[in-house]
Image: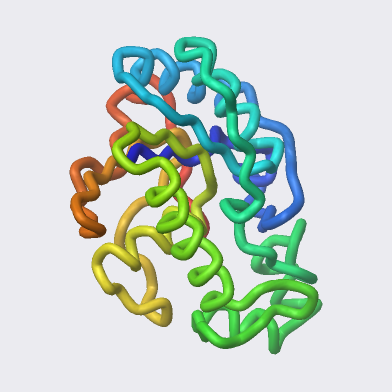
Length: 207
């Protein structure tokens, strides 16, 4: 299974939480997805699945120019629903919703953001769906286009890494991340590969 984070967006640059909202890809983001598409054109995939959010769909469509697969849109691979924090920077969240900001920054896994999801709700949504995808497409070479929060949950699942701990691995726009899965056991083969982006920058996911 290969997993790609969408290309850079305007809100990524502005450090605004996107969650279930969307913003346009930047010119650099468009270039990023064109470059990752070229690299992935040399690999073979049987299934292409994308989050149904615009920034992921745009990335998947660019990649798919080389594969001509049916893009399967999957709302369960959406970014975390950040509720009342969406569209805001950390500074704005701290000013408007100080208690929410504190719980968010402390990564309290059971804390549910007003109108949004908790970390544990996100984790269960993502990991259950990934297991379902593997079951449905057993033996297939799967390509998934998704979001930073989904990739974070995937790594924590594979390495049994607590949701309450701060992330210590990168999640860059348009990076290539690959796992092999045998008898339900996941093995990391490649993470955060941005060799194709050597000529341009790639932002890490907000931690």
